[in-house]
Each structure stands twice: as C-alpha cells, then as structure tokens.
Image (cartoon, rainbow, N blue to C red; front, side):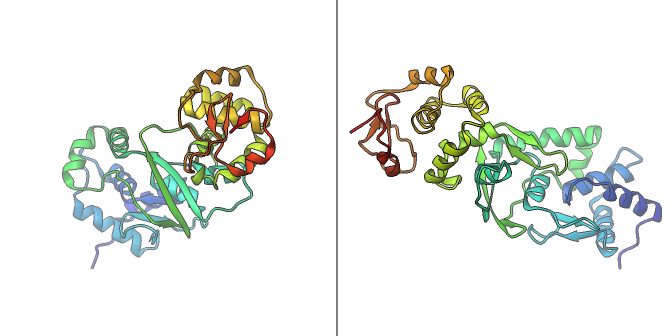
Length: 305
C-alpha cells in the first residue's frame, strides 16, 4: 500500500497544479514540478519516491490518466474543462504548432471542419536539440543528477488521435512562423505561412480546388501578409505558384509579385499542383504547367498549349 504524501507536500503540489495553465501535464513536467518541491539538498528524488508521489496524486484524484497517450505519460488535471484537441497537442509537444487545414480552420479561411488535426513539429534531430535546451533551462544545476535518477525526460508523446481527432504529424527540418494564442497556449501557423503551405502541400489543405477557392475569396484581404511570408521563406517554385495564383487567378497586383517572374524557368516541368500529373497547358509568364482542369475554362490570356 502506498504511503500517503506528507500533507504539506501534497498541498504544495495541489496548489501548483490548480494554477497550471494547460489542460494536461506530461510525466516530465510533473517530475520537474515534484523535483523542485522536494529537492532540498540539490538532489532530485529517486525514481521510487517520485512514483510514490505520482501514485498518491492519482489515488486522490488530482490527476487522471489521459487515455489518448501511452499509460503513465500524460495526465489530465482535476477540475479542468474538456480541452480542444489543439490545446492538448500543443501542451504535450512544446515545439509543435497547428498547421495546414487545421490552421485554415483557426483563421477562418475554410468552412470545413477537419476530422484530422494537422500539426507541424521539428524533425527528430532538431526536436532532440530543443528538448535538451529546454531541460537545461528547467533544471539548471540539477540536470546531471536528474538524468542519473532515471526520472522522465522531455520526449515526444506520440498519439494516433487526440480528443477524437486523428493526428497527422509533419516533421520538418525548417519550421514556419507561428503565433501563440495567449488564452489557450495553442501555437498556430501565421496567416502568411498558412497561405504558403497551401501552395506547397495543397493535399494537406483540403485539395488544390479548395486552395484555389480560398485564394479567390481571401487572398486580397491578406495580400500583404502572403507576400511578406513568401519574400522571407518562399522558394523559387513557391513564388512562381503564388505569382500565378495571385495575378492570373485572383487578378491581384503588386510590384513584389512582378519581381517573382525572374524565378520562372523555361523548359522545366514545374506544375501548379505538385501532386497532379503534368499538363501541356501552361502559363507563358510564369512558365508553369496549369495542371488543374477547372482553370482551363477561365480563358486566361497568359495560358497556352
């Protein structure tokens, strides 16, 4: 039978958890919290004492296992309202952000309600580097002793679904810009980055036809943000695709967009939709295969066989 936690320690942990600003806490975060409260000699608790503390918190109902994750890795907090999947995802992976169609939904760019939660996170090497830096910041001089005890470390917590939403995780070596929603802690791709992702990976954004619809209806409103993000982070092919959509489909203009024509390359096999087959109909200005049949009916002056 577990020995109850000392009353003062249990009260201290309860106070910290009641002020926790996220809907869940990971085993690593809980271990750091308990370490800070019990460490009086510069040494973290041993693994047995730590597990005893966790078991006490579970038995008193302060913590509840989150069934979307492997047992013993993520816990719900007593008294918290049912969270959104995005809140849980961003709490569990401190380096991930909501992206693609899920970001489009957040920004009000789509009327679709995705059954899939799209997240972007660093690739394994970058994630581990950031995790090591975060642990060093969290534990300071305790870090070496903490690692030696075998207490939980900051690591990925994989899950197939969160709050009933299937999770699609994109691991990237280069991350886009994102904003943090203060009220929830959710990180979400900026509007400019979301429009850039639409031309890079339309299949993750509702498909190329939906992307074109969104550009037609909303690109004018966010033109400056779209151009700014493309200027900073867009590749040559990104700018060619964007240039075609903004000028030939949306009939928008800006000197910076015109400057992107220098990235057009004659004789290549560049396509508007990166996933579809090449189509001989092309934009002479942007030297781009217009491989979206619905655009062929628009009588674009710049398009040729």
